[in-house]
Amino acid sequence: MNEQIYDAERARQLVRLLRTLGARIATLRNDADLLAAGPELMKLMGDARSELFHYEVRATYDTPETAESRRIVEEALRRSESLDFGSGELELNDEDGEEPWRNRD
View 1 (cartoon, rainbow, N blue to C red):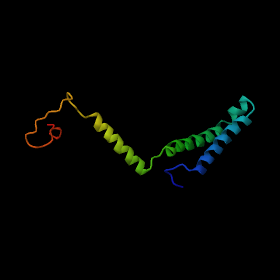
View 2: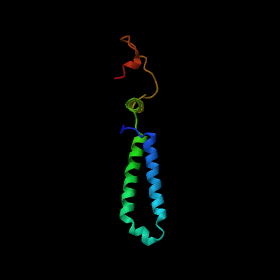
View 3: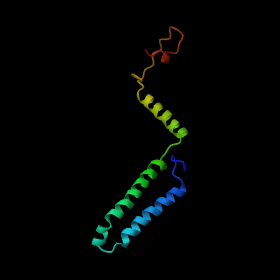
View 4: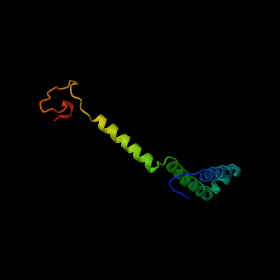
């Protein structure tokens, strides 16, 4: 199984695991039974917790292409936020033939 994605079958297994936990708790009629089933419930809850963690991580996993696109966009945003446009006036001192906006020293 590809560990980087959470496919439909694995999601169905998680739903079954959560329903099993809920059903088991529902069968414990009184407080004494519920407390006595502590070790069993801890195991079921641990399994469910672990699988829920994997679901959250894998369901939000970015493919390498998506991650690279996100990195490019974030870098562009970071660079645009750090631009200094000064007073907003363009210096038209074009002595060396270059565009003045390219000569920001």
